Length: 162
Length: 388
Image 1: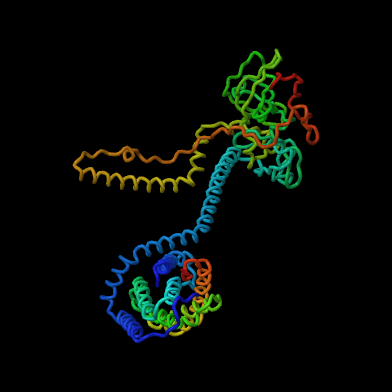
Image 2: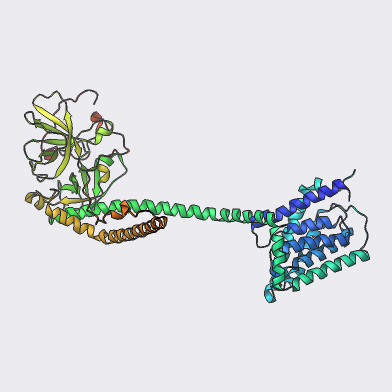
């Protein structure tokens, strides 16, 4: 990755992280959007699977420090999602809004499945309800937010032609 | 979403990296809490510190936004309650005064509520919630704790209509409280704020009324009994009359304060009401003490609580002064004795100008049947001073 695209990617990544800790608590929805996951997916399609896994691990581990009881759950989920997104990036090759939205949706849902299974705090009917109802809703909201951000931040996320 | 690199799968290095990351994550999951917490704490205090601060502010903003409407509703309800408390206190005071007047009259009266209309005659007449079924008849005097209000003009079985002293046709024979000076009191009908003053006409030129003197009904003519307060002298009105004086009076009853009134029955008028409106006597003081007894318990409790609070503060101050090595002096508040609430003295209401425009003398509409037949006297056609 060249310097200018790298800087743009880092800027968009920082912006998404800030959004995650400002806009998300400000909205306070029951099915929240996950800007960290959007940031990871945007980075993951630009780097090798191993690097994407490491970035995911770092993001997840740092985010898990807010919930020490589940330290590592977010890290393993982010690692797998980052690795998978980078490995599957061949699917998402064009500026197709629907495909990108599906990419975000799938990533967020997969993250939630891994996270809640690894966290082992929720179980039984509540876990099923979470994974069948709230996680898809959250994934849909995240997909919508990701698409909107892709449109708004196009100058930042597009690869440089120079 | 653009892809900046050609398609390729994961190499063995990538697999080793992802495996290592997963293993580290699972290791973190199974770490004991004593190890997990310090690691998380370090991350929270370093990398996540600014982000946590942002999140805290965002959550505070959201909470403030969510509570905004609730706060507005609470503030509105508190304001409404405060307004109603003031109105209730005012009404309570009026009712106490009415009760006091009823206790002094003892018999021969009918309590009634005065209902103000919203028409042109607002300032002239009121509807009373008592009629002939209660023994009310035409020309029955209407009084309030402060003094004379007016007279009943029309009577229905359950309600009646009374003209107020502001009515252009209202007349009452009046005298000074000592009975040395007599005259006729009517509405002043001036412009602006003077519209709701009274004037006492036909006062003998030899006598002079000083400002502040109380004017009461004289009892001449048979409509109003003797001794009902009408108003207090403000000043003399200069007129071209050389044989009589005219005085401006401040009315005892403001039209805006007419809510609960007493209607005197004919037998009470015949019997007289002298002594009922005398203030300051022993009976008056005893009655006011009885009326204030309802609140005295609550006030006493509040005073005791305040005294306890003051003594606690004083003891804290004393301790701090002693700790500082200074002399202990009793604060002024502490040395002040706790006194029981004293009954409030009656306050003479000031005239309040209603919103209706003051009518001109030459444009006054005569309302209802003329009541000149029951006037105590006929108003003299002497012109007023120009510019009044």
